[in-house]
Length: 113
Image (cartoon, rainbow, N blue to C red; front, side, top):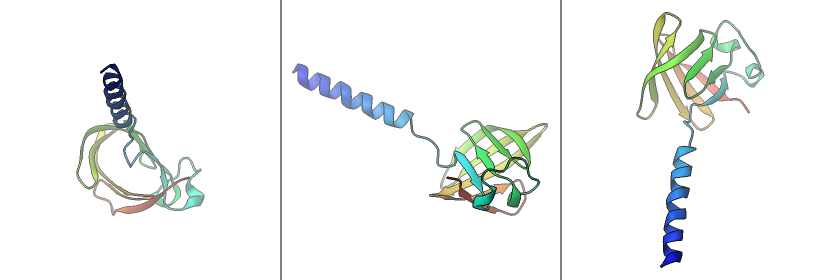
């Protein structure tokens, strides 16, 4: 009986750890071309890397805190960028991500390695 209790406790702990350490698919560094991956700054999507964490976005538009967020097939969020709120959609599929920033045309990015 003691062995069964220990096994159940370990299984529950392992399940909790794997879900707690899971990261969102959009988290990471993304760019339009591999040579832009190491770039900082830039003034458009073609020459600037997007850095996404679970709480912020940094791109050519500047630094933004992630506010409200909900997930469907893609992740939809309200980003607080300085004094402006911007609607952002991040649709990560493997090593590719489609980004819609405000009302701008969607950009296709690839994960930086």
